[in-house]
Image 1: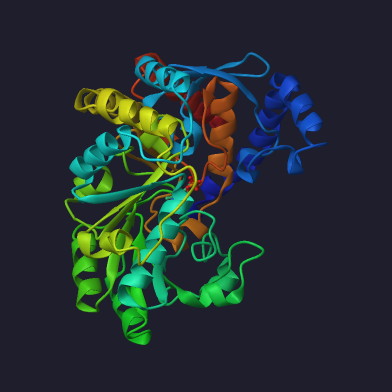
Image 2: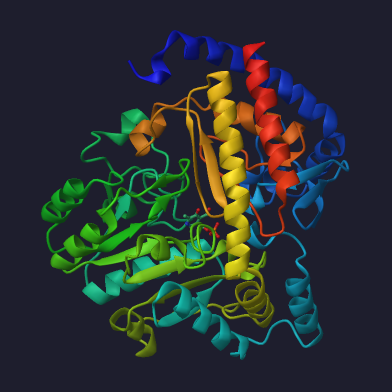
Length: 459
Ligand SMILES: Cc1ncc(COP(=O)(O)O)c(C=O)c1O
């Protein structure tokens, strides 16, 4: 019997329901201004927010200000920020080096749609960190992975791309397949169906995105055989980060690269969350496996919208040779380039990553102690600035994720919010992001809130 089936856990789930209701009331009582803003926004913004995932029950929290490791909401509540704007916030808020760089650039013009010198400095730094020589900018993670799909298809003249079940790679048509399929639609675990994730995706796109389970080399081999001669490549998060936090099994990524190459296909790492988040050179550095393409975004420009794709010459020269017109009005925008230069050369330094290591160890130890002392199911998984409490005994792929109850993550999110720690909503999917401006008191606040939840569960 697995931990998740035990009578103790069934009892916990009933208790969690009651705690969620209670904590939602606490949150509503703290956020009257947010609720008023949300009501006002609903008259002009569809759904009352700017992106649908900014809204989670019982209410969207409107943010007024961020400084250092803290944010303040519209009601004046202070939070240690572990939400990190869905993984962007590794530099923290209003870091002096980024403020100085952006302020100086604002005075000298914010947009030219012509190249600027900072774009060379940033590309050189990306090349150093990820070991890939040629780069191009865009404005988001979605654009980065879209470029990867396009480049792999052009380089091979093949239409299909392999994607992992349960991975999120942004909101373009080819990527929005089997992001969070329900169990019935998902089909067999060994050869999952390609399930359209969002309304508005034509079925033809789903047919071109072939779904495989995470960490299963034989499944990739079967897919390459079934779709022989049609697969351009595979996109993968080396550490899955939209169903908790799941590192690839040992040896898997190198074997995957070899297998794909043997079939004339490419390997693209989606490092939109992991890049800069788990190490200076992302998962590419941690695993020591060099993919053909790397997609980055989120943390690279200290909070300004920016993305990039890097790759091996045989693929990136499709851009050089103008076979692929990689374009965008705001690509390499001077403001984002100034912010990225400061972020990568002055803020996310080796010392900063050492500081994150110390904080992470404190946070992991604190959370593990709470799990053990209170007999809660689960474990802690953390790398670099990122981490999550995973409230089940095993989480290795999307099918495990389907089995694990989201009340735990929801309750944890509410206890953290109400205790002055911002975390991303959808606690079962998301993870914390620390910044280089966090200190031990931020970590201790997080652990205290976690203990409050554990005590409430046992009361
Ligand atoms: C792994 C991954 N790839 C791509 C994206 C899309 O990035 P963006 O929201 O900047 O388009 C995300 C966003 O959360 C992500 O987590």
